[in-house]
Length: 85
Image 1 (tube, rainbow, N blue to C red):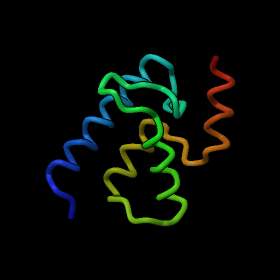
Image 2: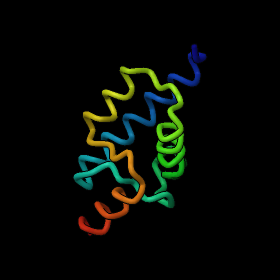
Image 3: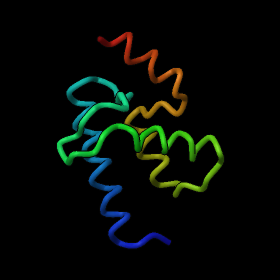
């Protein structure tokens, strides 16, 4: 499995996503978006790529992301962003 550090980081990122959703009403974060922890939205597109390539993600994480309304399709995500501006 993952080290504790990595899963802590995941929790951090998840929390930031939750906050983003409260503010913007969706979690289709632009890649250039800067989160308060200094990270950009690029890790979300990495997430999508891994998902597309059927890389294993713990079921629990998948479910939690889906609960937030995470959009797994990059094209769709940018569409949502444009709609919500």
